[in-house]
Amino acid sequence: MSLSVIIPVYNEVLTLAEVLERVHQTGLADEIIVVDDGSTDGTWALLQDLKGKYNLQTFQHERNRGKGAAVHTAIQHATQDILLIQDADLEYNPSAYRTCRS
Image (tube, rainbow, N blue to C red; front, side, top):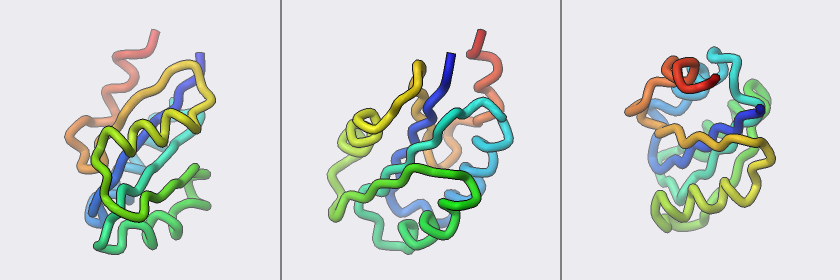
C-alpha cells in the first residue's frame, strides 16, 4: 500500500521546514501534498524553496478558506492508497506513522 501525506498550511513559516524533514525521514510517504491556505508570512515562498528538496506537490489558495478546504484540495490531487493528514505545526509527530502502518 502506498501513502499520501497531506499537509494543510497557514502561516507556518516557522515549522514548515521541520515538518517536511520529519515526514521525509520516515521513509513512508510516497507523495507529499502541501496546500498553502492563503498564508501571509512567507510560507508560500519557503514552500517553493523546499519543493525540489522533498519532491512536493504544492497548491495555493489565494485567500484563507480554512483547513477543511485545504484538505479537500489536497485530496483532489492525491494518487496513493492511504491518505494521512499531517499538521504543519507538528501537533502530530511523523515518527508515529510506523505504529499505524501494517
